Amino acid sequence: MRTTVTRLRPRGADYETARRAFLAGDYLCCVESLNVNVSIAAVALRARSYVRMNRFSEAIDALSSVVLEDTPHEYAGELLALKASALLNLGDAAMESVLTEARARAFSSGFIPLECEVEFLAALAAWTGGRAADTLCGIDRLLELSETVPSGYASARADYVYSAAFWRSRAHELRGFYEAARGDYAAQAAAIARAFKEFDRGHVEDAFFEARMLSNLAVLVRDVDSDVLAAFVEDRAEQVAWSGYSAASEFSVYQAIGWNRAKRGDHLGAFRHLRRSASCAPTVPLEITAILDRSFLARELGEVLTAGEELEHAVRLAKRVDWEHTTGLDKAALYSLARQLAPSDPVAARSLWERYRSLKATVSFLSLAARGDRRQWADECSAHAAVLLAEGQRSRGITLLLESLEIWIEAGYAWRAAAVAADLAALTGEARYFEIVGREAAKQPNSWLARRFASIKVPVTA
Image (cartoon, rainbow, N blue to C red):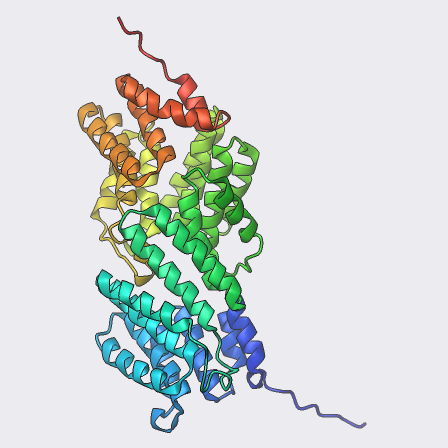
């Protein structure tokens, strides 16, 4: 019997397969595809994948396999930039010296896209360090640099992942974070819109970055009146190649779409998208948040039994969560649950609120847009107010609602302001709050807010 032996081609030999996997957000596949590829470009791409997976120490280990002294500047600069990125995420002070060397290598290479990457990283480092002026200078340098005609090694790096236009896109996104910190959310939305234009012009289909940009825009759009932006978010959401690594962004996008549909009176569409946000939630706390969204909307639409069942489901899930080890948006599920539970169980709501307060805030470098952002504080004020009101502490509860209302008005979030004003109108009967709710309800007559407005009893004045 004759036997034929076939030599299999190692997956690691195919750099392009790995590159496509990276851009699609399949980072494990990317790393596996490079398992026997020892080229410098492969090392860089492997390190990029580890950074995306938040495995920063492994990224640094992968980069250490290359001797920089023997490496051309257009490659050495990239490797050093990636090492600086990993160190920045780790909060390692050595990042600054590595970044300085990366800039020297990149700018001596004449390779414009790499120079842009280093400038972006420098601007990002300035932003995480709280140096707003340096951040803006870095963004301006990147934008000016990327407008120059590529020369030198520009055509010699066909294995480099990104284009100069891609880094222009990142610069505009970072500018959006800066605008959000200043409380100018219209400017942030405009910056993200510019980021999308550059992203599309760059012809680099990085699914993870596209998903994150869309998430940042969706969070803005969910509470403002812009049919154009709302339509853009919905259309773009169907084009994104969602993956496990972009699940948090997918959750935020479909949550925002759900609330946009609800605001416009499309309740079936709202529940459909809110269910999708729950199904793609990467953590149990975010799943709880999605369930609470459905519970709230069901209650506002008069579906009391459904609302109660959803709330009970959220309470059961909350008992399974190790809240001490949650971060960021996950923690917010605690005060959201306290807010909705307060009318029926003030004791349990108080316990949840105190648990939330006891947790130390953990802000990652990826949560940059939240720096100086008062929107979460406004949300917390409403949650705490609900607990206080359920306990009979009316005066303190109203004080917190007034603070929440002021923040939303200053931020230009008329819809969120009207929702708080509805609570104040029901509590105080003051005409000024009725007027705020009435204006927004008139714009969206089929919305849950319009239904709430119609149910509030206007006091009879003498």
